Image: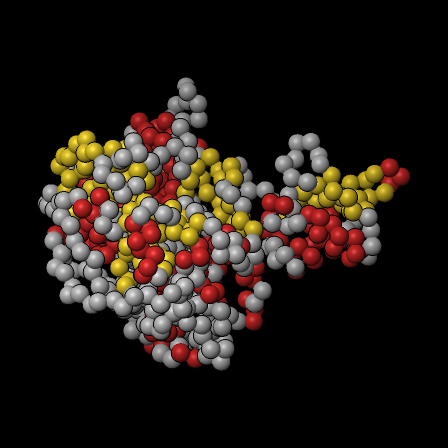
Length: 571
């Protein structure tokens, strides 16, 4: 994109209000950034300039400069970090590693291919990225980013491609025209990515160690590439993002020797497992009893009093400061978890393959169902305050968080009764049932939250199987459940009808054959008018067998299956 010279249309200093909007956009796009990071990227007092350009291909692009150093650029209303910013904050986005000789090819305008990925662990070489996700590329002998772009394929698609096709559509490379704009900074030498040598198509040329340059402005003290080390629990004890495979006899549980380690481990495991299926907000007391204690490995005991935290409140506060969770006091004296930052490295890199208790084995293949709410015209005035556009979707906790921020921003809670909220024009239009509906001046917090969710459009996404073999695109409407019904046909013969199997990644033809073999009855697949997916019809009342195969082989929880009550009554 910036390989050829571009035309500068304007270069202006940003106002305070524009800086605030930029911070909100950074929070939304890169939640891993801390408050301190944001202050460095968008300083309150220092000058920050907005440069509008026209690329050689005629595309309109904006980029932001701190002390004449490009740190961010925006195209098609999407924000990207520059290489200079990634040298300072390398953990902002995921990365791929390639051989040194690939860099000149990328600088010449080529996209990055799947075959160019270098990794010591073939099983993890594709990472966990989505199609269109922002990633950067570094070299085997240098951790510093040398290119940035968008994923052309998801990790699963890369795995299925057989090492062929595009991996990253490259937008910005080292030494392109964007790098040369303003203050040019040489490529820092941050050391090799892998501790052990990795085979590449050809041996990379010998790297000459350069003296680390001194950076101007924002890049004064470049951070090393992310190692995911935390003050709460060392990386070697959590097995976070370790490239080398563990030895089969090396148990992660055995490394949890101290009460501090066990408490932190159980906290992260609970968030990564059972809490994912719970609607937030979640009471802290319930989180400890229902989620943390069951997450404790066999042979270990969760004892907060013996740990450095001493109290649950101290653990929660530490995790809140680490930006792992967000906590709010929804009722006086009672705290709840209102949001979980699953993109945080402690959660995204958490591995629990060897210490799952026997009661949890087999649950990894459960469908992951994410129900979201989409912004429409009815609620756009509220969410546009946070640069959220029409059509964007969010979880219940995110919708509640933005609504609460809006209410606090305009100081709408009553001073003498904080549980009641004074309505402004925006909230009044959301609360109103109709055009001529009379709306009270003051309503409860919960009523506003419920009404906002009611006015939003509902969406859902279903991912099944441990390796994400089936991932459904985000769909509009309510989440469809697998629907089982028993109907009477001519001659008082019963048939079992099953709808929405395909929504959960079930191959209906294979499922039909399994039913034929399992119950020795005929099964047919029908296309019924008014239904979005195929309907399976099986001779006889086969509800018991269908429940067994859906919950057994496919690990679909009963809460997503309707009609189990039609099973024959036991005599």
